Amino acid sequence: FNLLAHPEVIVERGTDKYAAKAMVVTGGERDRVFARQVALRPQFGEYQQKTRRTIPVVELKRIG
Image (tube, rainbow, N blue to C red; front, side, top):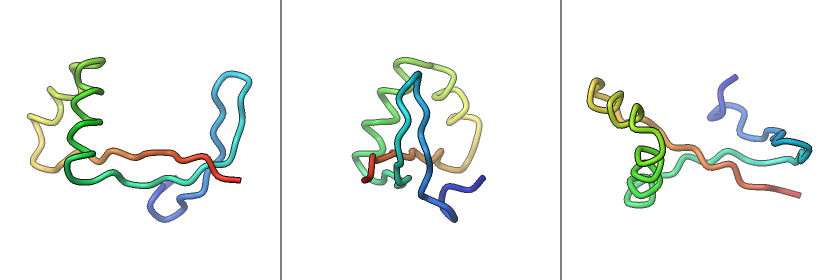
């Protein structure tokens, strides 16, 4: 499933279920979010170092 092609999704987290829209985070905000992710899961930083592409960060915003 491609979030860029189909950004409207249903999120299920525990017993919570809601509609959301996927949005790619860019620039400094992307860097801040990715750094927080790396702090929680260092393997994300390790993978970023092994690839030439920038790993995208996607935010799911609740809608409706």
